[in-house]
Image (cartoon, rainbow, N blue to C red):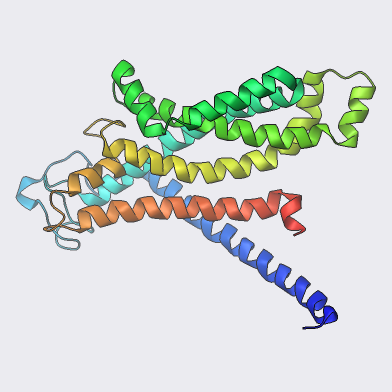
Length: 288
């Protein structure tokens, strides 16, 4: 291929890449909107109360008794999946919101102060990264007891250094811009510059990171629930449904496949949405 042909093909490749990102954005948004709708509907209606046991109809296959069958205690699987959707999303969103807010504040503060405070923040992030959220949840569970709060705190603690590093890197770039230098030259304080100029210009990166981290938070919450460290029974969770299904996998494989598919679909939706938002909100990605 000649140089002229290569230059002509480059814009076409970029257009195809951007079209793919737009498809990712739409597909991811549709998946997440569907999950949010299911979660909200489950607060008011499910085909059967999720905690209701129907022993005479235990381990019924899908389309046999109920749309998606029943588990070993006769619980309606569809109702449990719907209620579990609310638990997974509410815990994940709460954890990412808390961790993202704290991490962003720490990151932009470190970018403004620099020096010793920046080094301390980075080393603290390294220490937290060394502790997986599952381990931190087990430690917190020993002191606080298992439950929704323990799961939220454990996931949020793991999210703080992620957002701190993203905010720090983006804020350092913002502080080197001409408009920030001009604001400093006319005597604006660090707090004023951070609030008026730095934060608005890094929010795109923070939103993209939050969307991606929501997928990881759902996966982490499922792992915590699998170990019994999330919402206690009888409230259903996707992770505990997977744990309960282990014994009956050879008799009722749908008990493991259905919550597993729900978790995978949620993670896929948030990853596709984050990938599309990156192209939409980050000018650097849009020009590549």
